[in-house]
Length: 321
Image 1 (cartoon, helix red, strand yellow):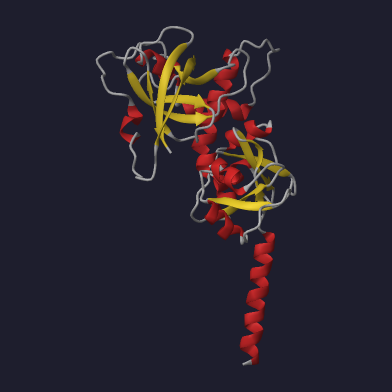
Image 2 (tube, helix red, strand yellow; image 1 turned 30 degrees about the horizontal axis):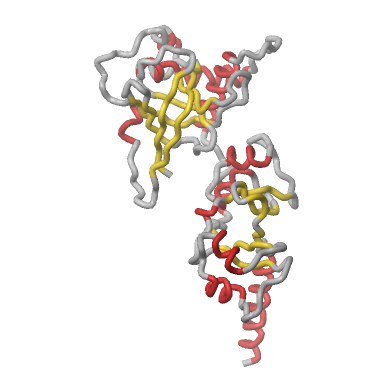
C-alpha cells in the first residue's frame, strides 16, 4: 500500500513539472498583427518551431526579421504570428489576453470570435465581478504539435533537396541585378549543379521551345490532388519572374521559388491567357535586388509553357494545405 502511495506521489510530481514547463501563450500586438512569444528550447530551429504552430520557417523568419537559416539560441524568444481564425473555442493549448484599461468581458468576447461571455467566465473561473486591469484571461485555444520528433526530423534534409536548392540558388544569384565581384564556385557546389542538371546533353536542349502540342500541365500535374480531406485550397496572386535552369525543357518538370509555402508542395499556376501548369516548390524566394513585391520565380521552361515572354507577368496560384 505504501508503495502504491509512493508511485502515485511520483506521478503527480512529474505531472506538475510538465505543466510548469509549458509556456504560457499571451497574445501581444495589434488585432491585425497578433502574436505570441515562444521560448526557444534545446535544439529547436525555425523549422521545428514552425511545425509546432503550423507555419513555415520563412513565415517565422520574416515576422521576426531573421534569416530563414538563422541559428536560434536556447532561451531566446521568437514571435509566432496568430490570426483570429487560428483561435478555437474547443480544445488545445490555452491562449491568454491581458486585460487593459477599458476592457470588459463583452468587449473581449467580441474581439475574439464572439466567444460567449459565459464561456469566458467558465474558462477563467470568474464570479459575478468584472475583470481587473492586468488580469490574464483564457480567450480560446490553439493547436500545437508538441511531437518532439518534428524537431529532429526538421534538421534532416534529403540529398535531393539540397542538390536542387543549391542549383537553383546559384542560378538565381547569377541573374541578380546586384553587381558583385566574381567569386570562384566551390567544388561541392559545382558537383551539386551537375547532379541536378544530370548530364551535359540535356544542356543542349535548354533553348528548345516546349512542344505546344502538349496540353497537359506538366510532370507534377498528377500530384496536384487533395489526398487529405482536411486540407483547404489556398489562393495567391501577384507578379512572377523567371530563373534559368535546364529542368523542364525535356522532362516538363516545373519549379518555383516562393515564400510562405512549404518546399515540396505542388502548386497550380494560371496566367491571364488561361494557360496553367503544375510546379513543385523548391525553396523560399532569395533576397535579390529587383524582387521587391515579387510573388514567385519559376524556371524559364515553365514560363515558356505558359506562353509568357515578358520579364514580369501576373499569375494566380492555388495549392492545398
